[in-house]
Length: 494
Image 1 (cartoon, rainbow, N blue to C red):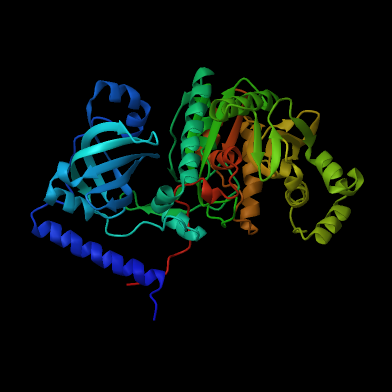
Image 2: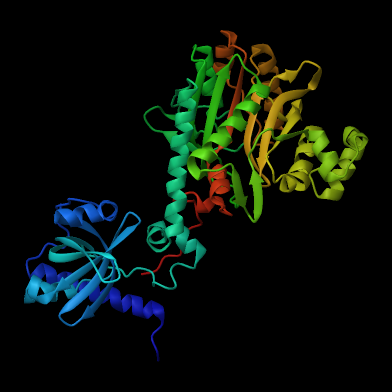
């Protein structure tokens, strides 16, 4: 019977183990601690002509990704950090035994080489190898060159192979790094102070979400992985730090989807003496700068649609968006009985608060249609317990959410800084928890105590970094922009 690919992989792995043992028996260390390096492969490619003119000897290293032998000569390629360079070896240069050992190298081995540069007849920069050293023996074969990693879950689970096989994946995470760097430069230039707040908290707060629970043995107390840094960042406003931001990891015990991962990265910032309307203009400026710095343009392609980040962005109230994109009338949305009837027909929970029903209708019917940058404002008070009410409409709050490409990217509001009103809203949330809503906010007495010392008027905003990277890289799933996303348990095998 013909071997399957898995059988071939297993046989090759066994052969590599035999090669490893032979190296050890010959007294060769297959995993030396260090090597000489004069240039990285990328540096060699950048300075190639200058090095050729100087006739310098070079030392570099990388992973062997191709090999072809022609009797007394061989060609190979070394790969490192997204760059590759060709190697040329000759038996009469290396010597009989060294050349024979070089030919026994396996694809995937890490190798250091010494030699001089030249260009082949086709113009390819190549190292004429005068000596080499094995730096790390690879005991498993890499993904097949032409097939790569087609199993999506295998790509996420074995990201190390995904990075080797797919240059596009390396580009995505390179852009992610540049984007976060650009974020820091933007906020530093606007005189914000980067801070760090606790990831383990005695009371999870700042968002409507179910937390992960842990236990601290020395303190003999239950703690929670943070669902948001909001309440701690606002404590810093009380303490006199008037512009603060944090690029933070949050943890929410929720389901998995193309837009949700249990641990995710957010930018959250707070700015004293400003309000949510100022943050809308600030956000437009931020996104345009990020796109210009990382992509060189303010137009994006996302899921086959062109998106233009040029301000000003369109703005609708929550109700207006349901009228324009959902096809409802304002009268239907303002009448509780009619609203519940609409919810039932739309498959939305009819037992939620009126504000909750409006939000669920919006998420199901309107959100997917918001492709161009859109601010949604005027959210109901009953779903915004940390936001300041609008003076002219006390049942609404000064809050916006930003939608681009059919998904929520940011959430912001003018912060509630009245400690008595905040206590009243927390107590209402406690009643909802007692009624069974496990995502309702908890009462945080220390936060209320901080507010009682006085917090200046301020606005704050949270921006989903993972979703922003999805948008800038045209990736369909949040798992494509997180190096090691959470996955279901892997089936074990011998």
